[in-house]
Image (cartoon, rainbow, N blue to C red; front, side, top):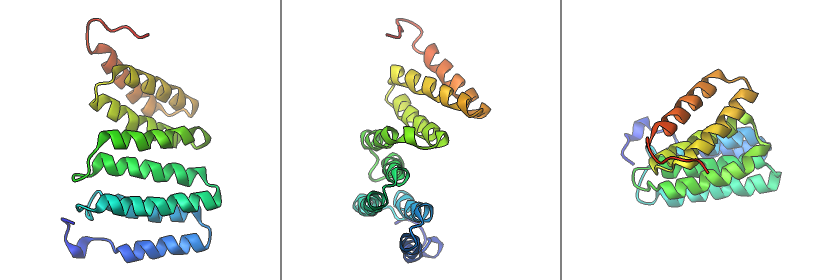
Amino acid sequence: GPAAIDDMPSLNHQKKAAKIAKEYLDIDGYKYAMGNIVNSFSQFRESGTSNDSVHYYVDQMLEFANEQNSIELEATAYYKLGGFYQWSKKHFDLSESNFYYKKANELSPQLSKTFQIQLLNKLYNIAYSNMEYYDQIDLMEKNIKLSKSIDNNYDQLTSFYFLGLVYCYPLSDFKKS
């Protein structure tokens, strides 16, 4: 990768943390350790084969999620894959990112509302990039409802702001079906 070797967190230490968390059935610890590994491949470990590495580690996450019947870990694995394809410079692919975020979103109603809001924001960003106006509206309306249900004023405000931007463009021939 492009980073200085001395500044790079040790992959061996991260793998060891994941192994210990798995031994003790610590799903949160495993989720964070493996999530850090996956995130590192779109940042300082990025290379021509980093997508293969990411899928290798995400497959391990999905296997452990299946063993533990953890929807949260499964959704996080898909979320991390979506993030990889959104932020990787060498493997940037918004359609892949959108695909994995949507897979995580299918599981999200059973998870925290905060996680659901994060997913909706990621999906909104992709819809914005693709100029998919109706999707942007639907995503922000869902985001507003979730934000209201947990009294999250910041997310409500930003969702209203983004929704207003969508309704302002284009200024003509814009009818929601």
